[in-house]
Length: 497
Image (cartoon, rainbow, N blue to C red; front, side, top):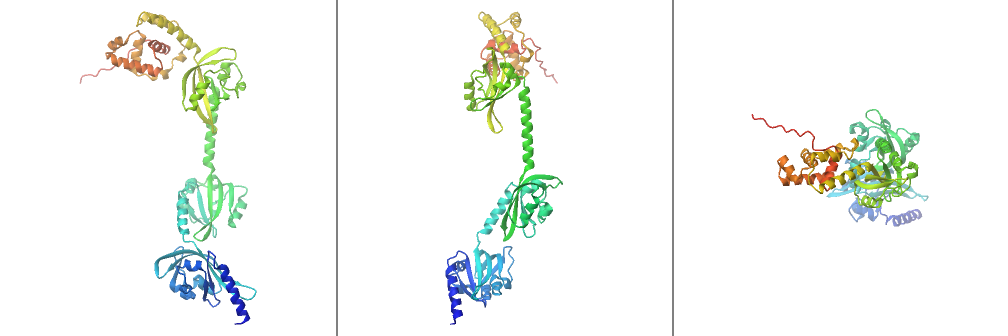
């Protein structure tokens, strides 16, 4: 053996010792095309542990194994990787399906690359590198499924010709396009990177296959308009082809939402400021005042600016601790009686309603106060008079009712139509007879009902108007203009046919 042959043999043994333990499959060819050696990974990838099972030569390999492309087209004989390598033709990555002719169920998905190397001593190395990607088609199937169902608008383009090869429903919905109008079109034709001062830089990165960071731009809609977006480009590999995945954040929907939120906030602010009843907006936890309307500032006698940052209790509203505890439990406060002490030392009787709300993402409390000071005073006087009369009799004559009605002059604003609307026609009849001084028996006789039915109506009336005594019900009715002397409800009798 000559010195050159000895050196070549030594180099090959050294090379084999280096690559024997690599995870990648490695096959070495002699310059004449003979398969000289393969590591364990390459043999295992071919379903064997013996070198001779590879066929010794490219033609022997073709007799034992079939190669197809990922699109299932059979690779021509002279285009097999070993044949190309034997012809000293190096090549970059090929995505192939590998099958054994003696085993119909054997299938491997491989990525293959060929290298033709020479060292300084003239040694010739022809190396076939194989990567096992058997699980990758399944991953690609998962990608297709996730890509199609993802609501984020997205498009995939080949980098080779920038043609669109995939588009999801989110992109079609955003642009109003059809799938046929997008697939096969170029990124330039679709203007996938339209708008923005950095468009030129983004296109340059696309042409180089580099990632495109988030940028504001526009995409064309099918109706010819522009849709504002934030676009991102990410290089990916699909079926062995370099591609670019474009994803978009639809700014039009966000802009419409933000505009609607601003309009709602402006409407709320205007309604809050101009409301005729005192209103206050507080922090949800400790009822610190964030904003008050003009009616509240006038009611307590201080400026609106003075109220900001003050606990609601220090602004004069009594029973704040109980209300705060109820609100923390998620309860709503409706028409709860409370006192509001003014800066001058006076006191207003109020009905307070409050509810937890979220404004600007922060939990807050909106409270409204209805001043019932005059009504309370009139009701107290009327209730005292009624209870005095009821000590002697359980019914009122019309003359007594009329005299009691003269004790007050109810303002039309207190006659709440909405309050009356909650009563049925029958319940209003029962309430009117109560105002005339009839007891349950008298009401039953007048309306031709049983006594139990009348009692049920009375109980329902108490529940609906929030009272517990007959005298309080009469006060409530008188406050809303019910005396029992209104025109009776007309009942049409069926005519005999």
